[in-house]
Image 1: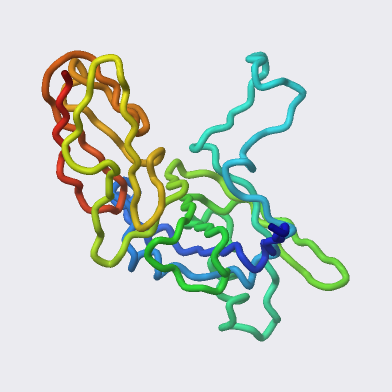
Image 2 (image 1 turned 135 degrees about the vertical axis):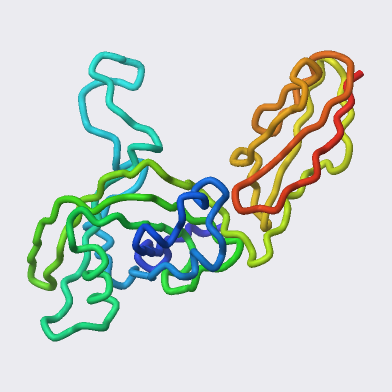
Length: 253
C-alpha cells in the first residue's frame, strides 16, 4: 500500500466561539450536536504553520528525562494551552471569516471555546460521529507578525480547566454505546474478560467510563472485567453525550 500524505491545513479544522456556547453543565454531560454546530469555523483564518495549541503545546522544555522528578514540568489535561496565529483582515473588512475571527479572538482576556477536528475536511460542518478536541480557554498575549506574503496576529491562550479530548459528537437524538460481546456477562474467577465498547461507529473502549456495583464480585478497568469472587453484580458503562446504557448483569462463578 502506497504511503498517503495528509495535508494538515486541508484536513484539520479549527472552530471557536464565546465561552457561553457550551454551558458549564455540558462540560460534564457532553456538548450537544446543536451546540457544536453553532461554533464558528475559523479554519480559513488560522495560519497553520504559526499555530501550536493543544495538550502537547503545554509541555515545557527542559533537560530532564521523563523519569527524573527534579525540576519536573507540568504536562496534564488541565495544562492544555499554546498559541494560534490568525490572519489580519483588510482595513475595510467587517464581515468575512477573517474579520469574524479577529473580532472573536483578538481581544486579551476573552474567554472562548476552541475546538479542533482532525482528519475531516476543514470546511466540512460538524456532524454526528466526528471526533473533536474541545478546550475552555482565555486569550492572553498578542504578537504581530509580518512577512512577505501576510500579516498575522499570534495569540497566546491560557487554560480554564475544562477540556474534552477525543469527544465523539452525538447525534441530535443521542444513542447508547454498544458493547461486544453484548448481553449478560459470565465470568470465572481467575479469568479476566475483555469487552469492546463502540459509539457512533467508533471504538471508545478506553474513553468510556465503567463502574461495578460491587467490586468484591468483580472490578472493571478500561473494558477489562476482572472477577474477584463468586456472586452477582451489575456493570455500568457511560460516555459523555451518549444516551444511558442499560446496566449489564455480571455473574461470577
